[in-house]
Amino acid sequence: MIGCLKGVVLDQKGNKALIMTPGGVGYAALLSVGACALAQPGSEITLQTYLVVREDALELFGFNSSEEKTLFELFLLVNGVGPKTALHLLALGSVSEIKNAIGRGDVSYLTKVSGIGAKTAERIVVELRSKMKDHSLTNSSEKSSPTSDAVSDVIDGLEALGYSSIEARDIVKVLDAAGKTSEQLLREALRKMK
Image 1 (cartoon, rainbow, N blue to C red):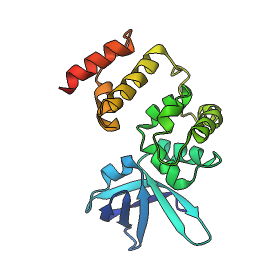
Image 2 (image 1 turned 90 degrees about the horizontal axis):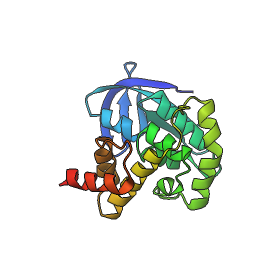
Image 3 (image 1 turned 120 degrees about the horizontal axis):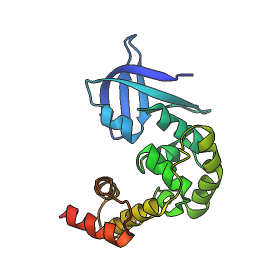
Image 4 (image 1 turned 90 degrees about the vertical axis):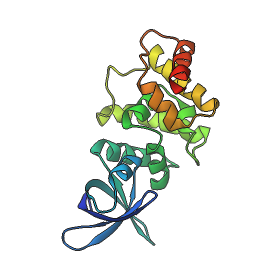
């Protein structure tokens, strides 16, 4: 199995990259959003990888951290989630944002991915809450709290107002959410968006 890949990025289009190793072998890989940000043509890159072996194809998936790869592998354990869907799930946000959403049972967060319906999202939440603890992806101090629920509400509110998911998450990161309601945070976020 190919567990790690180091080389120079020859080409990158969308989430696909061609990486040439020092030994002269070129690998085509599907990359997570985090890995895409690092994969600029001409740059040297080191990726954690996961190889999917099928009857008709070999697909290599690349990640910029072992946490991303571990979360990807956990998604694959859920019935109805394949490797491409797992990669799309990783695009929802950072590993900590995704694990917090799963930890608080935020099904609507997961259903933003094409191909993930309410039933599959519920299955992900039920099956992965305990598995993430076993794989050290969750912090015992990071339980669902009124603050994390308020932040999630603000992200949903901003998206409903037409802001992209990325814009909403970026603005929420700079807010001080301690002790504030969803409404207060949303007003503050809208002021910063102007």
